[in-house]
Amino acid sequence: MSVKVDAVTSEVFSVAPTADKKMAPVRTIPECLKRKAADELNEQESKIAEELTMLKTWMNQSGHIRGRMEDQFLLGFLRSCKHSMERVKEKLDTYYTIRSVLPEVMRTRDPLDPFVRSVIKMGVTVPLPKTVNPDDPKIILIRGDAFDGDVCDFPDILKVFTMIGDILLRDDDQMMICGQAAIIDLGHSSSSHLFNFNLSFLRKASILNQQASPLRQKGFHFINTPKSFDLVLNIFKGLMTEKNRKRTIVSHGSSLESLHKYFPPAVLPAELGGELGPVQQYVDEWEQKLIDNRAYLIEEESLGVDETKRRTTNPLAEEKDLFGTAGTFRKLEFD
Image 1 (cartoon, rainbow, N blue to C red):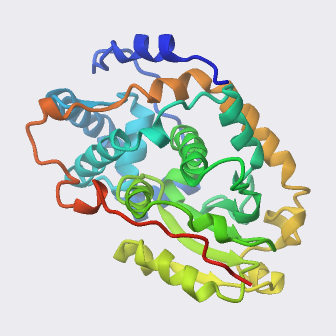
Image 2 (tube, rainbow, N blue to C red):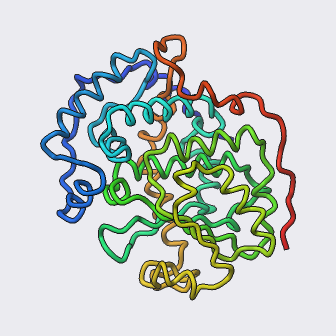
């Protein structure tokens, strides 16, 4: 039985964000991140305040977007779009629009809900704490064999993934400036349950995690892959934007030696031949972190778009597959 959150979300929903709300100051970042933000993201400290004011004014005037106005949150979007105002407007609109058509992901995000907490405890998505250099991309571990398809479905996994992403967007400056590299560990069990979902949902999920997400991908590394992995990889690439297809995409088979050429043991958990100790400690840390941020995550449920008030073109208008594509991947068996 789920914890009831209706009273909380309805209260938050009734309060529209405004530019007049007192905001916490933007965090100071280390010099190495300042240099990277300036060199790679076109960031000019002297212009940040003006850019944030312009962005909040645009959001208030849009009419249809119910979004966060916190400076730190919006700065993450500016950085992800290299401070191009037009690009960040498009990404923010896409971010809230796609979330509005994914209720199975963006509703009931209470980390104390017994079912949601059981999915969190699986530890499918695990941000790792260390990188070799302080301006390297942060490392996200995705554990395919931690996904128990008898307990939950892919949308439930994506829900927790977005909950973690929302906290990283708000709190992790290295992530927002340097991007993230994903290690996708398929484990040694059958991966068939990963492909038992509707094609329409899969398309929405790909937009949520690429065009709409301010978390920039820097590479994809697959480890412990099955023999028939080429099929999986082709599906994976087919859902990528052209930009992400140009990123580093490496299949390491079952070779930890190959993986360690990109990620040395010092930044990996013991399960991947690393020195960080068992991955379970990071699963537990993130479970607690999500619980500590419960109010913030529940508040996210009230945000999105009101299409009846839109005065601009819906950024997903051309994505016809989002609303009714039939078909499901059914139990592709891998050896």
